[in-house]
Length: 284
Image (cartoon, rainbow, N blue to C red; front, side, top):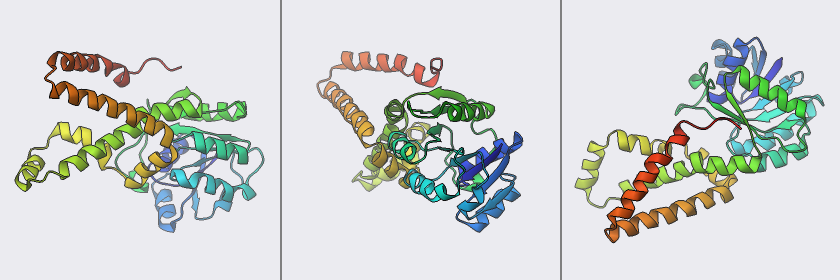
């Protein structure tokens, strides 16, 4: 297949590496000429250009831009597309993207490969990034079945575990396991740096080890991405945050009233409850 990729960062670049290795012809687009050249040097793409018009002959195009640029990019693409060209995205929020893009382009298939690293840009691109990772496809009743099947086969060829669900269910699930942790982690960091005693603050920084590193990692990530998660998945994220706040209030009350039995019961429940998230049940 002839595959277009717009946005040659970590996700777009890694897609290019693997799909090209599988024998597909990869045409890339980036705003920076230097990124285009580096993508060719790294073997990410066969050709790269700064102009979207270079993707005229592609069979499927992956839009790997930030969430806020997905629909504007599709609008720029439309004049150059064949009617049968499949458009998909890699955004971490699906409901507003799928609604807007599907109304604009009939062959749009919402997608979300759930893999990544803390690194960004073309230099972060790596092979096998998506192997054994979830790849969520979010069709609606109007999404062409052929497009869904093609994207599914491509995702499976990457070694991904493919899931199908509605955009709405995707967004609430991701709010729990991705977007809420970012906000909780960011709040943890914000709370720590507000320690008023400079001696205690410095000591805490010196003593911070694996526990703090694990729980603070996602809160110390890309601020732009965090804002977009909140902006585009506002309703689902607020629902998760409110439930989390209620749970935190319960813990505060248990500690304040020295209700150690209830706290122990909660910690026993969370010890058992964590396992299905780390070793998830079979795909649906």
